[in-house]
Amino acid sequence: MKPFIFFDLGQTLIDEWDYIRYFDNLLFETLNGYGAKMDYRNYFTLRNNIIFNRMIGSTGFLNIVSLMARLILPKGYDRIIFDKLKDSLLENKKKLIKLYNEVYRIIPLLSNTYSLGIISNNSSGSADLLVKNNLIQYFKTIHLSLDMGVKKPDPIVFNKAVEASCMSKEYCVMIGDRLDIDIFPANELGIKTIRTLNSIYKVQKPISKKEEPLFAIKSLTELPNILSSIF
Image 1 (cartoon, rainbow, N blue to C red):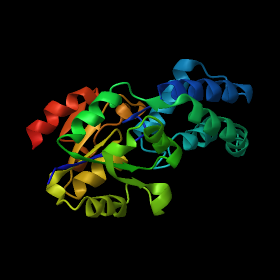
Image 2 (image 1 turned 180 degrees about the vertical axis):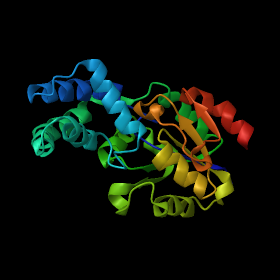
Image 3 (image 1 turned 45 degrees about the vertical axis):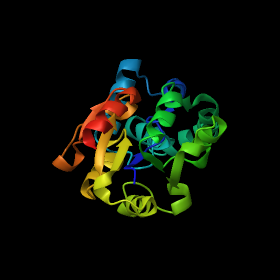
Image 4 (image 1 turned 180 degrees about the horizontal axis):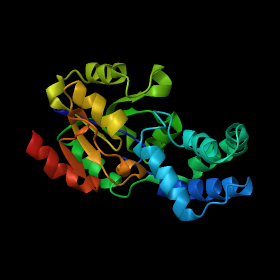
């Protein structure tokens, strides 16, 4: 049987950089509109520190809104700003995300040698990009936290994915951008790991051996050679 390769979605297969720029500009302007008085340098320092220090957990971008407001504005503004921006952020994310350009070539290519799957905390809306671009056919199993009732890094997510693959863990690889919810739980279960660095989460640094990936890549185009060296 073919080794099984699991992919995260957001910032692994899905290019979110246009959305991230929109997110940063909107949040920056809103915080200053409520009296934050910060420049872009201070904004990005604070935002990256939140990510670096693992303050957002598994909830992602929306939690950054509340955290930043809580850190620099008077008590209570975090809820006001979150409620103000939530709908716009969710709606525009659907419009601004897209697949990385290399996905269209790499996924069909890898499917010739490996079985492919998805393990993601992203919504089904993100997975719909694979459907719209006729790539869903290459994935044998898709595990979304929304459908499972648990989120990464819960080991239940990874165990169910491995069980569905019908492969032993040593013949499985997890590819994702976050050390805390992709690399650590996969390593802990004995799944091989590859970290993608074209992500806002590249500021994270390993805090234990379990957070160290087997490989780190800047582009998915590196995968064929790396995977062939693993198997």
